[in-house]
Image (cartoon, rainbow, N blue to C red; front, side, top):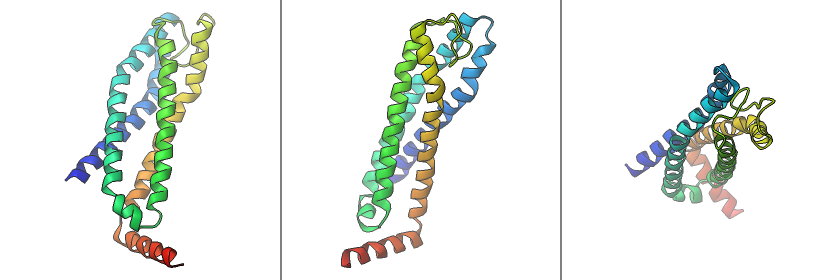
Length: 184
């Protein structure tokens, strides 16, 4: 049962982290340009991202708790099955990169959000009257808004691969390969 709970936390958290950041990049940031004025454009984008932030933090927390549970639940398999440890190390590195990109995005978002009704073309496009420090943060966010969904998408693919590693035939091959590599 504990493995089911950790899998659920891992998967639901990752799904929300991926889906929410993708939706905001695809929908919220561009849609904010539909606001009546340049200053309300910034206010709309900031309000949306500020509402998403606590949900995103909870999603990331659930994912991390689930990930730790998955690592704990698969410790023996990592030792016995060739390839599982490498997958876990790659997944951990990609998770760290996604966390770093998310934290940096939030830092930039705070710079933009501090000027709540900052004039802008959209959530990530400054206007001619956007203050320079906010415009710089928006330009960085324009690129970074795609990095977090890309990294969390990669995590989703790695998770699918990890699931395939748990199929009985994959476990048998991996355990056999581990034993052969220890003998050689």
